[in-house]
Image 1: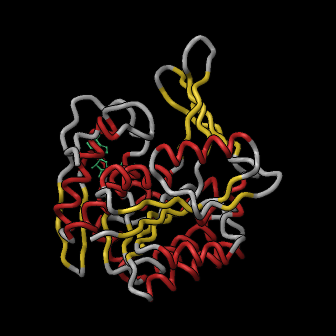
Image 2: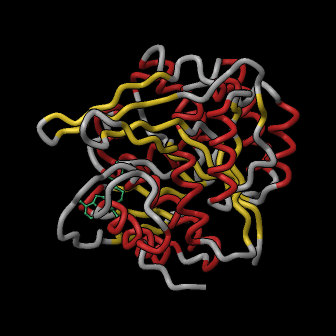
Length: 306
Ligand code: ADP
């Protein structure tokens, strides 16, 4: 089965320490990371599209070139005059990473302002992926536009996948965050939360409580990721558990959940075997946490060559 996978959100310029006071430039962001791993894991007859907004500056041009190089479609990316991409910097102190962000005024904040382009993209694709971060960066009006469009996609029978990816700092208040993330989940058919976030921010006492909450909201399927403790799935009400892979040395957990999502969706779309797809995703995520950086090259993911 071939198809089109659409990921919606913000990709930022990433600056990381390269030694001797130098900085290395890269590109990353939760939904772009998932698109990257979906691209790496999907067969060649699937296309992967990224939906965002960029500016008209050189950095936006470079980002587009980077997506193209990665075989990620750019046909639905709007360009906004006078805008630029968001940026974050990774600092290292005593082996601990910390992040500084400059994204308040990024072009991606207006990704849903062009409602026509958004509808065109969603209508053209078979699988839609977005996250709590995608919703958090939008104005209330634009978040409503996005939610209405993904609801249409779900009603049309498309797979709509949502990772709550809870980042309190991006939200104006806890109440708005809880309400909007719940709306995101309600608009989705599959929710892919991380248990530690859900326990802290929604007060879930167990993985079953997380599954129950999202199913009650209207998502028929839920995959709760729980780091090295594995993942618990509920598909059409049937629960299963898939262990994480053993990792010799965890180098960098950035993008663990994003890579799991991309690999899971890719395999699930091919096989419709959710536990099998989760076992595959656990393998890919284990490779990702064994390497530096958010975007690990396909050759390092241990995938069969196609
Ligand atoms: P997030 O990055 O969203 O917080 P998790 O930490 O739950 O997500 O990790 C997502 C997946 O990555 C897990 O379900 C697991 O398969 C894998 N993973 C994460 N950390 C480890 C680890 N230390 N060892 C093995 N696998 C891991």
